[in-house]
Length: 234
View: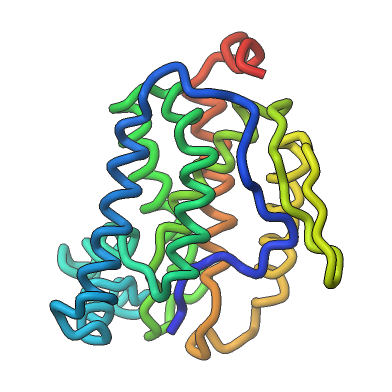
């Protein structure tokens, strides 16, 4: 199964230096929804998990073949499903650290629309990269990648407390957001290029959803937020 989760991150963010100016209600709601759905579906077992993923996960071939409302709705529902506790935890960590500040910049309603649009376009990028894939894709990674792209544009000089694995040792360093998120994107892009020609149905990470989401988020942030306002938040 293609999880849509993140690849093995080389640097793991722990916190950032910018505090929210308002309560990030939308970010909190998205966190609760993702965790709640995972607990109900994967932990409590209120439904058959595999069938649930087949029904509500994103299957590129199904979208390309039928292109009806049911298939297209999978672009939305797949954003709130996760394949494992680790998959969920990784996504929610990034959303917790970076989502509140992007919500600050865009406002509650603007951020909600941004998150949904970013996730839908990220899923579209995955479909275009693997249109014949019949493997379900799930996860909030595409939408969260859009949040990361927007954060890079809005707060490039923000400091991110980052865990850096060095073999059997680890180091915690305070790095500019431009480095942490820039390195993250470069690795995604590299893996995306390498993935061309690979069998899309062997499972793994929907890396083009990450790439597409990040680019969309960065472009939307530049279009929505005036440059003078972006500078004042650095």
